[in-house]
Image (cartoon, rainbow, N blue to C red; front, side):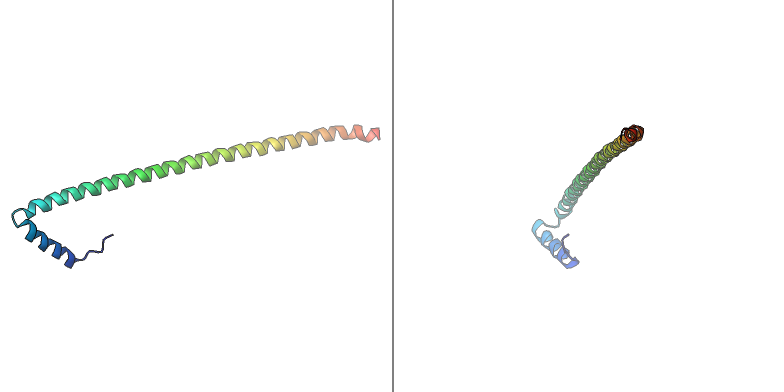
Length: 101
């Protein structure tokens, strides 16, 4: 994320040592590490929540698509039943139509 090398970290450490002083530097470093850890934990938690929400949304979309597919399959089956019924009626009526002509 940040392109910080060893020399930059060493420079920041020296400036911190000069500004804060050698007595307070360990306490400040410990406090900074604590808050950095809390921030990382919070970011990790937010990432996990976002990932979980995206997964749940994906499942909802798949369920909706499955329901649409099932409805379409039911419609096709109903149309095939109607077609079969129409063929059966036509087969039954054909002899009577042929004799009328």
